[in-house]
Image 1: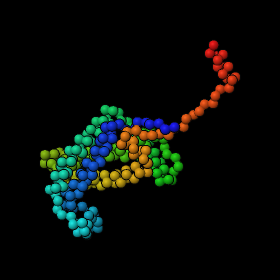
Image 2: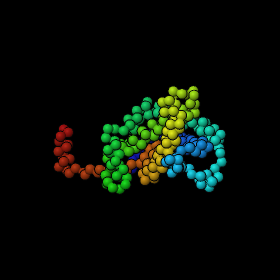
Image 3: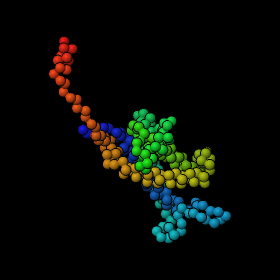
Image 4: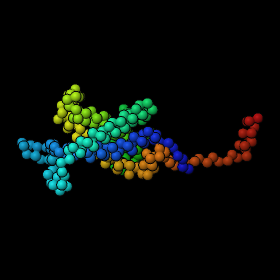
Length: 238
């Protein structure tokens, strides 16, 4: 027998689907800003070993300088990113949904078992409710990363007006490194998240759209009581 069970609230689904395209635009426009000053890489004694975007990349894709365009998009959509994130935080706090997201004491141990299960090394998965241990850690981490992106972004955007925030982030250059590192973290999260969604199947994906999931349950059919049991039951009710 199949039953329909509510899984995700409307506000959670709304902020989830708004955040995906907004964050994509933020990363896209952030690349325009970074490409205007491609400063990061790994060098030893003045010899560059690794560049995040080597020169052949710029030559092959004919990437022009689009700093002003990138900043315009980035500073516009950062407000959507900030407001959407604030709305999601408010929902999790006031609804009590944070209890299902915050990692527990044994979550890191169970997350390793979840990983082994996903790799088909372990047959059984630890007991879970709405989210498993790995999801708790990942979703909490992405919230912390979002807060970090806003703070480091403000430190880069207004280093004079928010001098105290820039100082807390370790200075302008270190705040820029942190901001760039968080962007790499988002890309990795996107890739892993999409793979996990595909592996989880259609039912899980549908629940993030509709808010409900279909669960298969086994109905237990009780046998009919014998005539002797019926007589005993009727005598007991007298």
